[in-house]
Length: 407
Ligand SMILES: Nc1ncnc2c1ncn2[C@@H]1O[C@H](COS(=O)(=O)NC(=O)[C@@H](N)CS)[C@@H](O)[C@H]1O
Ligand SMILES: [Zn+2]
Image 1 (cartoon, rainbow, N blue to C red):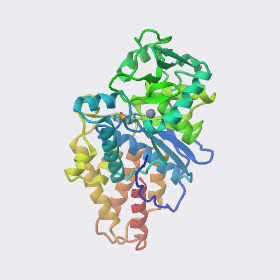
Image 2 (image 1 turned 90 degrees about the vertical axis):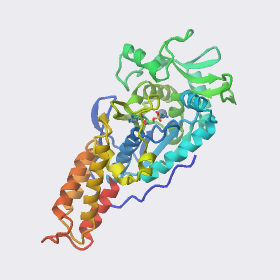
Image 3 (image 1 turned 120 degrees about the vertical axis):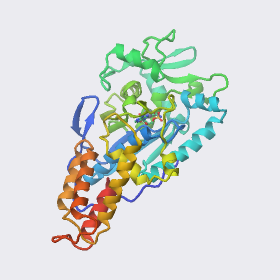
Image 4 (image 1 turned 60 degrees about the vertical axis):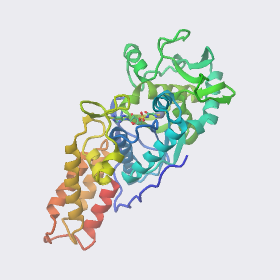
């Protein structure tokens, strides 16, 4: 599936420090030292109600990681899926009377344009669940060979106990898992399952639903195995980072890791990185609640996408926070002062600016601190001071422009 067009990544005059990022599994900041290209899999959208600010916050967060690794001298290999067939998408299409494939395609295209507007670097592989069926089926067969799959009325389930490390991604106890599981697509009560936490890897055809003829029978893939299969195919294992919003830590990332670990008998990822939840009107922004602010609607109302990006960067990626109109107003003010300062023919020295911004991003993607450094530089530069000791003609503005681009 086509991804989108990436903005240029400016070459910075220095190499940034090694990147540390918070790993949910160890609940600690870890220095992920990629062997060769940094390999990251970030879960993509289920394509409806795209691109709400929660989605955008999460993808901008992982864009920071992508850029911080590049500033530290690493190549990055970035893979992202699109869950273009799954219960929530089919339910939405049925509810609105839309064709589910057209809904998926139009929403994925809207997502692409929003990501381009927010200057998020495109993944190297952008893979839909439907187009991934030919690589999901062999992965399920691999799990069958490992004795980790069983059938319930024609549907195929993965036995979570097949992975001794099951539970290490979230660190949750079984009671917590069982409480949350039904809210996030799980079916713990289904009769015939060996363990209530076992998850679907293949669902036999249901009346009125799309289905594909495969060696597993006629049906469609489970959600979790889609991501482990796509990640294994395009990145191999053990990958450096599996990423997504914090609502994916369980069941999704727990199950994806367990399936990949049984298939490959090695850890799925070195770190599991999760972005906090963005709320609106007091509740997590979500499709089911309908309390969504969309990037495209803000853009239609005239918001500068760079102000939207700055508004997202003003909050630490791991925090849960509430979107307000004031976030955008504050970002527009900051954007104007940065642009005014960068436009000056000379400005305050920038050596420490570059160093401090890169250090902030390398420290668990501390974008708020990086913005503070840029704001302070802009104030020192002012919008019109030709102050003594100003950098050369192109020095200040050009470096900071590149930094702002890089953030
Ligand atoms: N309110 C929110 N705040 C922050 N991130 C969110 C929010 N809602 C969803 N996300 C994140 O946005 C990404 C896409 O969410 S999604 O459209 O529901 N799709 C999925 O979660 C699956 N397609 C992953 S394979 C996920 O990483 C999810 O955790
Ligand atoms: Zn996923």
